[in-house]
Every structure is written in C-alpha cells, then in structure tokens.
Image 1: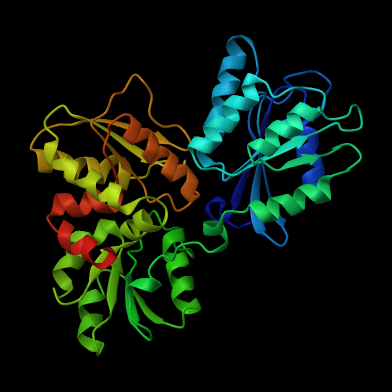
Image 2: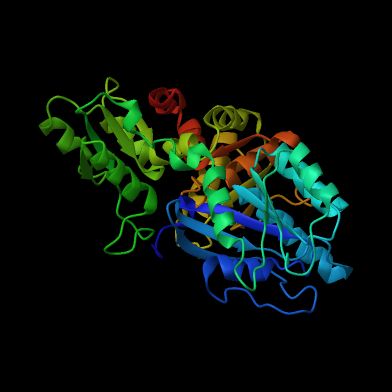
Length: 399
C-alpha cells in the first residue's frame, strides 16, 4: 500500500481558513499525528501529504494545506502553494467552524471547485464548541453541498465523513480509463519495446511499462517484451503478427523502420496522453510544432524531479529534435514537479512528460491553464513522433 504511486491515489485536499482545525481533522482521519497542531493560527505553512489506504475506496493521498486567509508576504506565498494543490485535488474538503458564516474565502473555494467540476464536502469542525448556524446549513443545502459536523479532537463525525467521502468518489477513479487493452481484439498479442538504458535502473522498469504489462495480464492478453535491438528478429518469428507494437518514444526512429506498416504502432507516452490527459488537445498541440521558428519559447515540463542524466529525453533529446526540425535554436525552459508556467516566460508551446506519476486531475488542470492562456500543449511521445515524420502512424491506433 505504501508503495502505490501517487498517480493511482485519490487526491483529497483539505482547505479552509486558519485555525479551523484542518490539521486536527487530517490527524483524526489518518489516526496519526500527521500534521502539527497548535492553537496558533498559521501553523501549517506548506502542504502536508499523507498516503494511506482508505477502505473500501483504496489508496488515497490526503493533502493538508495552509490557511486560505493567511496574511503578509509569507502568507501570500503559502496561499499560492495552497492554490497549487487545487490542480491535483479530486475531492475538495472545505473546513469551517459552526458559528462562522460562509465567508468570501469559502465562497471563492466553492466557485473554483465548481468551475473545475471537483466534488465538494463541507465540514463544520469543532462542533463541540457551538451550534451550527441555520443560515449556513440552508445555504449549503441550496448549493447541494453535503455537510458533515465533526469534532476532530474527540473523533465525533469522522465515521460519517468517511461515508460521505465514499459517496463522493468520482466514477473515473473507481473505473479508471484503460491504457491500451481496449485498442486490441480479445486474445491479442502485443509487443512492448523497452530499451534498457540509464533511465531504467538495474532490476527495474519504468512505471508506464510496468502498468502496461499488468493491464495486459489482467485482461488475459499476452505480450512479448523486447529491447529495440531485438525487435526485428522477434517480428520475423511471431505469427500471426502482433495486434499492436508499443515502444518507448525515444526508440521511435528505429522501431518505426523495423515494424511493417501493416502493424499498428504507438508509444507509451502517447497512450498516457490518452489516459492521463486529453488526447485531442494534445494532438492539436503537437501540430503547433510546425509554427515554431528560431527563438520561439518552449516549456518542457516533467512531473518527476529526478536529476537529469546524460542524453536525458527532456533536457537533451527533445530539444535537439526540435532544433533540427525548426532549423534553428529555440528558447527552452525546463520545470519539474508541481512548478509550471510563470508570467516571466510567455511560451509558444508546452511539451509535457507522460505524467505517469500524477493523477489525471493535475494534467487536466494544466491543460485548462494552457487553454485559458491560448498556449498549445502536447507531450513527449507526440512531439517526438511529429518531428520524426511518423505522427499520423503513431496516433492512428489511439484514435
């Protein structure tokens, strides 16, 4: 359970003003002293994450945030970090106290959640200290937002909150979209091309490859896993031909030459553009590569925070391919983790990794941001396929 990647976990964000008991609520929900609790307002300064198993939902990630009403220069920075958590939140838990009316802070959160189609649960904490305001209950009822009354210190109401959480879980979490098994007929055989390089430590495969193999086995299909140097020989020996060949995007150039045109071909990264993002928007984003010219600004975003290695795909290989395609030097900026676009870099294109370590909500939030700023966005596999001239072939299996 502890090793379940974040991308597989339901992200539960806890939001509210300072000193309403957000951290105490998290501690009660996790049955651990996860967050520091103090009577001093503003104790939580950075988002606090706690992975756990919440039965019968499964693996979840609780995120405790700083007060949305924080003050001062540092307070503004904390508020921004809190707002960043909204990008990956799949259920928003707004915490307040029973005697307080719904303030502008809570109203703004409700508006933001509604705009992003994020389910909301309203918690009136510290119910042992006061009776809830009738006006608050009626307003929440009119907004059709479920309300739970809790006392985080004694644990009263925590079981009821668990029940409401179960009822609020988005359907796409309980039945996540497949990676590839819906693209092939029953009883198919699939070839997975997995180059073994410095980015795959000895004894391990990278997450998209592991997930694909497991999904194939769960669907009672079969697969052959080969390195790119073995592919041509394996294709000669298998009969009938595979229903699909999936390759690491970095091997696209060689693999596309080895795989006959009659055999469908795509990449792990393109499959994740379908599962973790919005495929149609990402495809249109890749087509924007043709509009780049010398000096155009390109943001390359990666969800992982690993140290770039020699010939790293994001920092070396993709920039080289794009510069060659454009016939000049582009202006690149690289970001990792939850850092994203900033006002000081108005880019012409965003190229994102496959986001295998993230939940879909955060990728959709980034896509929405790019749409609002009129910036095309695509991902590694689609960008590589476009620059190599095999774009139409690479996306055909997923359309």
